[in-house]
Image (cartoon, rainbow, N blue to C red):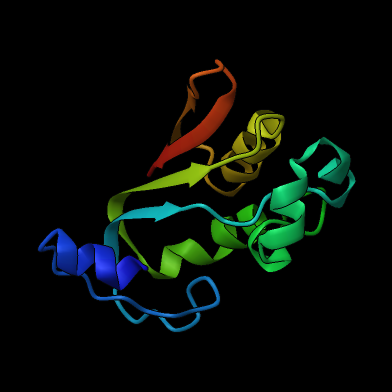
Length: 128
């Protein structure tokens, strides 16, 4: 689907399949990620069609949904240029935990959060 959208919109994109950054050999100014972030105990609050039809590996993460944020905070230095920006989608109850993960890794990072249309924090922007 991504490749079809790129062709349709005349966008030149180099797609890489990777477990986070393991197959990435370049450095980037901007990284955007929507990692799996749902905790297993949130299933009762989810729409049944999402739980039934979406791949669980695209939805759920260990450690209360924070596992991938922890890995990204540790591994992104290998693929980020100096003064890079990272954008992450987050669960609406994860703002404080995700901000803490990245502040612990780099206390000098500038971190902002953005709200969705329902005024829930849903995106974190991290600049180093």
